[in-house]
Length: 285
Image (cartoon, rainbow, N blue to C red; front, top):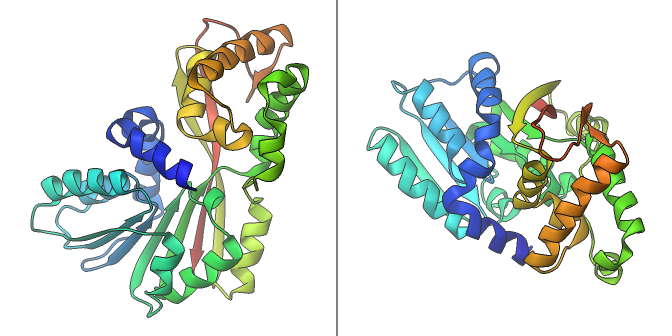
């Protein structure tokens, strides 16, 4: 986890440009259709990053006085959020930001104080069987918990491609390191929904959202995957120079093997635009 914190810390200042901008349209739709926010609502964003979701909420509900609580385990992310939100919200909204582990934070807030809790791309870093009961205890009656997450099912395609390449180029792969480390795999949507109902959430809604992303070529996409931690999380790749060579080789290998991702072929130097599937899950207490 220390390496993950360091990685996000280094990316904090330009994280929105690298990652969050690809999901602006999706969040616009969620705020228009799925989230109903009222005056004086208490909203908690777990893994708040640079606070971009709060920016969107403040822009839409600029006449509502809201209580915004953000938690992230990366101090640089929290500081980036603090700078951006305090400038935008001024004295109108009450904002509390904390650098903390999400689980430890929730353990201290089990008095049903939140109307809405958000977890965007957090599930790969936590134990759901421990997280969801804490979410239930932190939500007010009739409060809701919204999750944005990729699913294990949709990562199998890219994961299988990586493993095929790595088997063919074993010298790039640190086998012992991966065997010793516990890799965190995303849960299936069925596993998530089952856990919610076991905890007596009143209603659970799921929707697959095809979020359009665009890159200049497949190499740009792979570098984006690496910046967001998806490549290094699965494969623990080593030095930057070695990693860059591998990314170039991956594109060549994909073109040679006619690999396509989400139906789009990987062709060197060609635009690489596709619909990234993410799940929107809303659990109502």
